[in-house]
Image (tube, rainbow, N blue to C red):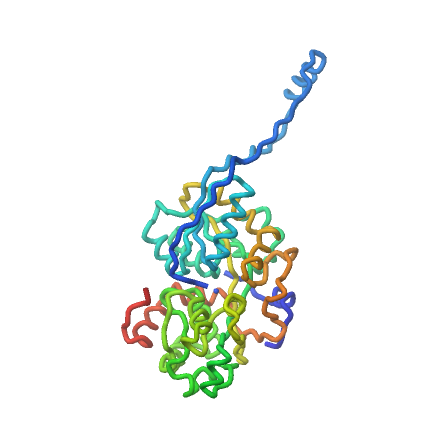
Length: 387
């Protein structure tokens, strides 16, 4: 598959069924009461009969708007700063008391499974679509199609209300330019380059058992190499060059920025964000063989304590104004709403080659299957998942 502008990528994608830290700090915003409006009509004897007649003839079958609960808890799988900004903005606009908990995709799924019919959360914001797609298999997602979903390209929606896309991001390599120069190694531009002897114990990536980013990378390899067996064989070779496996998908990029490793496998927008944050010269490159991508999502948690507020959050998250908040906190994904401004700092996808046969559905299938367990046994030798 050749080079594509993002608009062409959206048209070319098949139906879609991807940075994560271990931070568990809870933030909240308690804005004032929601504004209400009241229409006042003249109370005259002449008008009363007309009003009564009008009421008697009213055949409207419109249902009254659902009453919003006064609080909401957001399960958030994007950068902490973005979680904070969106939670505060939603609370300010609606008057709903809002708080969030930041978890990686793997942590989020495990938490939902552990809590069962009594979840702590009302809505899930961010992270690859494979998260809610996997959680839906256990009945932990309440399908909801927002009226605002009409503004989102169909290829960036699950089709059944399980999730709706809020951004797109491409997987890539994030390299510390100064560190690579010291090693005498060029920035990697292929998966084969990651196997270079000069990068022994100098690469970081997320663990397959805990991260949606890692699942995207695995699906990328399966699409390129043709099978799960071949992907695991490659990951076994790459293991010699891995300094650390992380729980979250974005953590390897911070390690590259801090000079702990020379290169990381992460989503490209996370690398740009770390460069903006730290001022370190980080290079974003993409595998020439073809790369994978994520569709970041928003979805409603089943058995939520505040289901109406959760749906209101989904409606809000799909608007251009909500999606443009990301750039204000150095998050440079490409918004799903075509009316939202694309950040100038966003990685250009003009020269990104998409891996033939890759789809986010493939990442979902791997995450839900035995690939993570095989990775633990065949690549990690039974080592425990990072905590």
